[in-house]
Image (cartoon, rainbow, N blue to C red; front, side, top):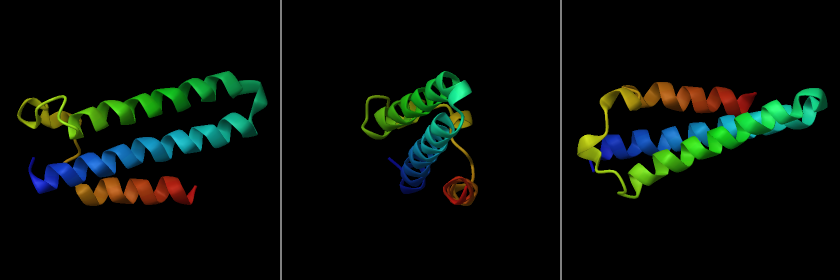
Length: 86
């Protein structure tokens, strides 16, 4: 797998996990909507698992649609930083 694609995949997984953690904070902070935030938390964890399956070779990189990955590693890193800062 191309090094840049590998980095994009790793950062994308981390972004999904970071957003999941943010939703978990919302789950605890807003008890009236806890079920809603919990479902979003689980969805983000599942997204990370799907992307991880690409990284682990369950889906050959050559058939990975380009639209599924950001074209900018820097943008994904910025998004990760922004979510963690929240």
